[in-house]
Amino acid sequence: MNGSKVLMLEDDAERVERFNAVLLSIAPALDLIVWDTAHRMIAEVDELLDDARFISLDHDLYTESDTDPGDGLDVAKFLADQPPHCPVIIHTTNSPRAVYMTGALELEGWQVARVVPLGEDWIEQDWRHVVMQVLSGEEKFDPQED
Image 1 (tube, helix red, strand yellow):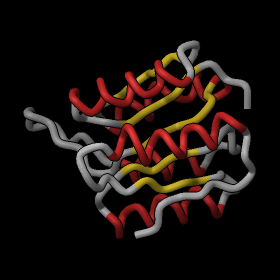
Image 2: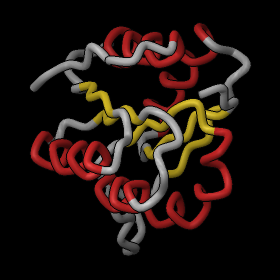
Image 3: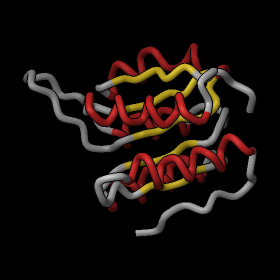
């Protein structure tokens, strides 16, 4: 688990800026690569998995176009078909889908943590806490529970 990239599914530009700021403050050498649609991430992520330190997935995605952006469960199912490469953090308010995402990944041996986006500073506090655990190499996360 010594990859140099953080792979993320997230459709909100303001949140991406906040994720990036947190990552820069704790691990400036890591590159954040973000997709705003599940379909694009699935099409492009395969070649990056070997260099991934961790993956962070949202579920509900919105786009201004008529194109279906897919969702985080699509990506989780794709990843579940791959050998586990790195930990996955699921950051979504959609609790039922987070359970499906977690189950799909854990059944195939992926290490998964959940961050529930609650409050104004959940990225700076809760997501940061789990990322610090991931980067420290802890075997078990202390994920938030719903």
